[in-house]
Amino acid sequence: MDRNHSSVAVEVSAGEQAAQRSGLHAGVLGPFETLAQSVSAMAPSTSPSLTIPIVFALAGDATWLVYLMATCATLIIGFCVSRFARQSASPGSLYTYTADTLPRVFGATAGWGLLLAYIATGVSVAGGALYYTNLLALEFLHVSPSALIALLVVCGAGGYVAWRDVKLSAELMLWIEICSLSLIVVVLAVMLVRNGLHLDIGQFRLKRVSVSALGPALVLSMFSFVGFESATTLGAEARNPLQTIPRAVIQCALIAGVFFVLCSYSEVLGFRGTSSNLSDTNSPLHLLAAKAGISPLGSGIDFGAYISMIACVLACVTAASRVLMRMSEDGLVSGAFKRTGRHGTPTAAICLCTGLVFAAAAGMAGGRISGSEIYDLAGSLAVFGFLTAYALVCIALPFARRARGEHSTVVAGVSVLAVAVIALIAILDLRSTADLAHARLPWIFAGYIVVGLGWYGFSRTRPTPVR
Image (cartoon, rainbow, N blue to C red; front, side):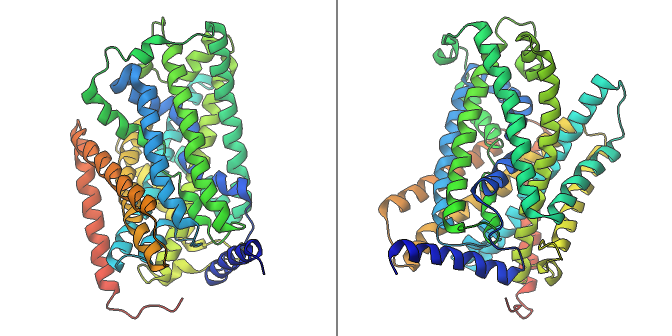
């Protein structure tokens, strides 16, 4: 057997073994469907409306530069994740990569951190969906719907599709994002053409840009990228996972980075000469669509962003349930979460993750926290979980390669660089907390990890379940 056939055989075997162990459907997702998982977990169509204006409030004309820096940081982390994904196919994602390499306590830390990250991201985008529900309802119906009912629809729809069929959910997520992103690109392209194709020199001269504000702006921009690695949770369900998943991780980071840089540049340019400020606008793309003379597309973008939020809830529930399933196999949580139902999906894990997303979002809404504030606070909390898992994977990569008899100075150097970048982002995040609510988030995350590790210590006293 030649090397190419041997490589294919290894990939098929890796996917099939993971699927047989977990009960998931092997090889049902192709390259585009696998990519859709990562794209939808990022919900890129929401950043131009909700995240870029916040980044602009700090970075001003340097917003495009901040997103370029965030793209580079994400690609460095993505390089380490993709290297792991070349040699391991598992529904456990970054948790599995860490747990199989470093001492188990680090694996448990990555698992609990990643689980919180996906759940908190789901809560965040559920809040974003609530924001757009109110925006659209007031525009077309002149009423403000019940937050509880709106969240029930969003979480119920995402949870049901995640339970019903992983292939259907992946295809649905793909087309939702394609349609939503296409509308945004059309609006920005028409706006640029009607304004005249010229460079906005002010954005490149970086005048009136505070260097001290670039750090906090970089932290905020990173939230646009978190979740780019979630295709790794489909190791048991993707075709040729050792090839498809690494490509999806890098492609997602690269495509999203280009999109965010272009959007940030175009939005700042589009608001030149207007009476509104980008950072104070409820729906910036709606305003830019009106400026371009295609106002109906602005409403279409708002609706597309709402649907994209539901797709992101679906992606987060899908990813979180696979991580929970893998943690169940290792005895970190109840064995009930590792079982799959008749649709080949982890039913109990999906129900729990959906319930947690709904309960947290509904609780915050019941406390009179607006949808945009839920998006901000829950998203900020999620960043800590992602950064923890990213850092541990980057630390584990050189050790995993050494265990396989492989060594590369380049890979080791990139791993060290990635850890340094993550540490810098974490420090900037801690230093950029400007209010009491955000200042409490690191302590909430730390307390959560302590409880998780306490449970891990307790679980070690019980017999390890047979995989």
